[in-house]
Length: 110
Image (cartoon, rainbow, N blue to C red; front, side):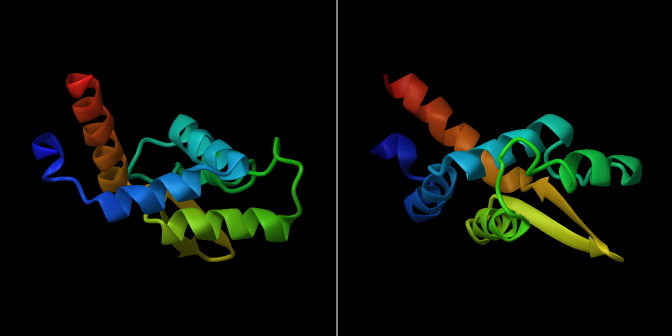
């Protein structure tokens, strides 16, 4: 357990719970693909990639998509910012680093 001293297991459990739903994992992966972690997509891309296309392959109602994004945000995995009528979404770089450190530590232990 000493390799995991600097990792907040409660934060990890919350993140894993949020990512355990296939739609939320898909949303998270889409954001990783279209945006550099920690930055909102460029203004021209927000509607196409980050905001507009998040639900494209999910076949869910907009309210359901909103719920999934809210869950990811509450788990600390996403950051959001309102820009007029648009809401920008991006991967929280600190949360991504926490996940990276966890899996790197797990890989070294195994």
